Image 1 (cartoon, helix red, strand yellow):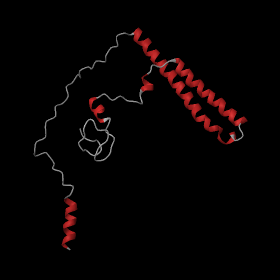
Image 2 (tube, one colour):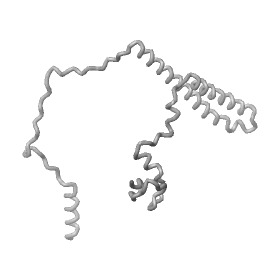
Image 3 (cartoon, rainbow, N blue to C red):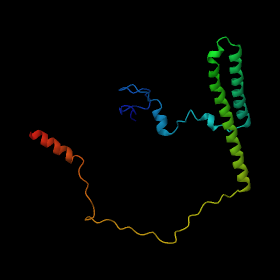
Image 4 (cartoon, helix red, strand yellow):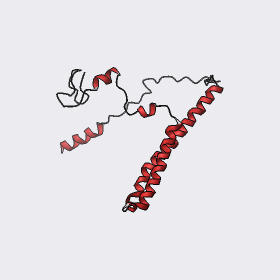
Length: 160
């Protein structure tokens, strides 16, 4: 194995590269396919109405608390509106979970009524496509060199 940072050869037992000090402890797991994505766990759970309601009503609670801070906290007039950020975030998450759940249920109902989903078939064209012939060598255009003009300028400046 090689270090992904500096390409120095490393052993499977090493945790850090001896040349550059990079953390290489996960390289053997990544190469064998044993590594799992850590950030995707939340999305792997099945969506439930309880999750959607909990998230939505948490957002409502944040709104109530923000207005309570505005009314009763001594310095609440300065920072009460910052509580609206998690409030709308939670409410949006709850609405999104509910819409996702509703779409899943709609998909399940469609699958019950139509167990066999027909695959679209591609019809053959009525007229066959024209065949293109390969260009001959006399028809090929040789592009000019990218460095041709640059070297010409260099040569003329050196002759002066």
